[in-house]
Image (tube, rainbow, N blue to C red; front, top):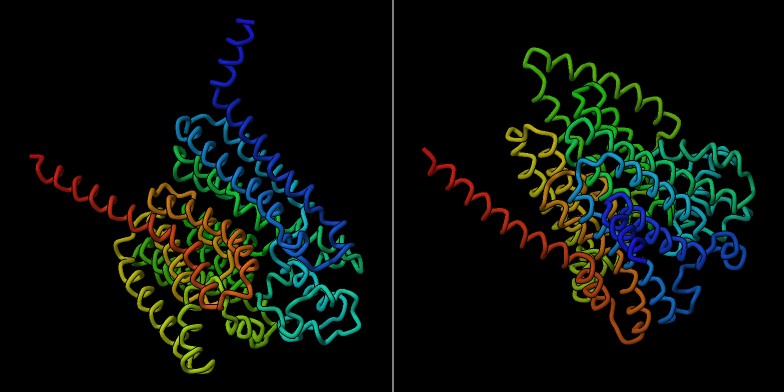
Length: 494
């Protein structure tokens, strides 16, 4: 018995064994979600639902969800703590990647319990493949006899996404045909595939630029509960956009300047939001080139980008009507919606929208200009990624009218793996607060008749944005104090 106890003590003291144990327990959390909400039976029972409606918004269903998702988050923090103590153990990287793929494949079989976007992806692809029409111009409602139309919430609006995204969905639609279940599985499979690609891309970036952080940085993205829940779990296409953005980072750290902007433009051609990263990336590449080579760099990268964009866009050349209509939607989770809902009660819908959009856009442009203004002092990729992560987070808080919890995976994919304490703390807390927004949704439904929309909006903003904002301000203050102390020590040295 003593020998067995000694063996278990040594085994559990091994970081590899500890990580395998944590990974196995985490997998059980995701397996619980998948078994509780299996894709095929739920689609056959009622194709368009969420885990609240499917369970009549019961307290038990919320408790089960919170147990699984918060359990995964807690284990994620423990895994981070373990790897922070053993950053050079390369065996741990294999375990991190293997479990990330296992989590993704497990969640492939889960019904998208918190969003219906994947049903719209399927239909938009169907418009191109089966009807030969442009989904960026033609809404699903144009095909009233289609059996999939009942699964689309935004049937009156064309696709708000980019042309590259539509093209990536074509093979799955061709294979699946009129089989809704197979269409959903293949569409989710695309998210799982690109999620795995993001994991490997982050590992490759860190291997080249910061080996000390390769294991920890990869884990912080690969085991992130929000990323796993929203990308492999709900099938959101933001993960596809972020793989191309990470490819741009990879080319940047390898100093392959010609391919940085084309890769980033590919990201924009999936979802347009990463267009806000073009200026910082372009300025950084420009500054890193020799003065004599800058002109050639601009011409060459411009030609490559123009050929790529022309090839992708020409078949879909159209005003992005779906994107414009999406921008007119004011989410109850968005900070700008607070101003809109307040002003709407005083001055009506039109005035409220004009004022809200004007103030938010101008405010973000000022923040953006002030942030990019300091690009001449950014001389390392780490600084650039931290700046770009800030720009995305600032957009979500200041100017994103239609914010949803899964939007948080954009800055997480872009920056959580970077060795920057402030960025990591904020994004880890943002992970938790975005997940808790689903619990807040239950509170809203339970008080649906008693609460006005402004109260609901304030609750969601407090849950989602207040925690990362407070952590960011506190961490920024501590970081500033630490830097000043370091500067005083350096100045005192002879």
